[in-house]
Length: 128
Image (cartoon, rainbow, N blue to C red):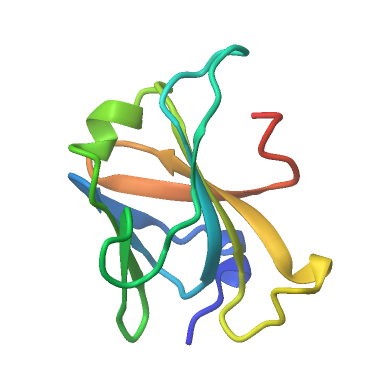
């Protein structure tokens, strides 16, 4: 199992294909924030329903990756890339106690170029 803190510190990259993010690590996602407009008046969408079945986000884990599929989105790169928006994952390392504050992190997903995404650990999602 691959942890996200080390992967992000090592500069590992992921991929985006239409409505699907491939993350090069494992994690326990608590919430997902999607901001489609960068302004002081815009509020991000908060996704908390990550259950099986009718969830807005489907998850799949491989041996060394996590795949997040945003069912209600078209092409994430076109919708959020080029500084049009952002995705923030509020997560803990897989297997860690999610009830301890020190185990929780905010991960900003950055759309680099073409199908490449990078990641940044941030302190506060309200100051982007």
